[in-house]
Length: 256
Image (cartoon, rainbow, N blue to C red; front, side):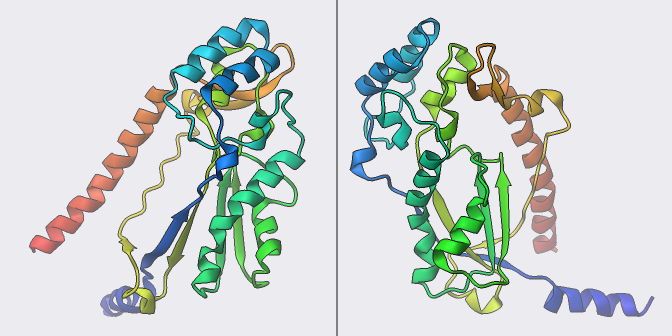
């Protein structure tokens, strides 16, 4: 039909919105949050069940995480405080990186947050309140899709697959400032060309690869499956395969 080429041209020129990365910054934990390997072992002696202490020591000393890495406040106590106040305080400390768009004088219209910690009000609501963002800001809190706030899930039992979360994760955060305004093209560092989203939730192995649950003794923790690496590899292969098709189409169009 004659209107189709016109519609396609209008969409390409006016309808599609590029996405630019204007800036980003990473949270650097203060020096007082550092935890040495020796202290980590001592903490396990007081806080971990005897059956799991040996694995706690082995995983901590072989993790490759240096004594310069920051750790949540809960890891600085011999009797971990897993109450709601502790992870909330840690999250507020990391919010310092979110001052990036405010320092650049940018109006925030959308706020997206990934985290394991799921309080009420949500983390995005806390950020909106803390920085006084505009009333029509769109906020998305994707709880359960991040591991940077593991404080409330400090595991005190003896199951090896759940002790690993005490070892592998420290504290951190990053803020990324994106824009879809064409006038920001000149000051952007990068431009998003393709976005591929791969969700493996329909597969049982993938679904149970990282799971928050209670062990037989009633201790809450995050379980890491033995086949986590295989599941992650499968997701990466699927994602790259989909992305490669988009990249090939770009190469072909440029050659033509």
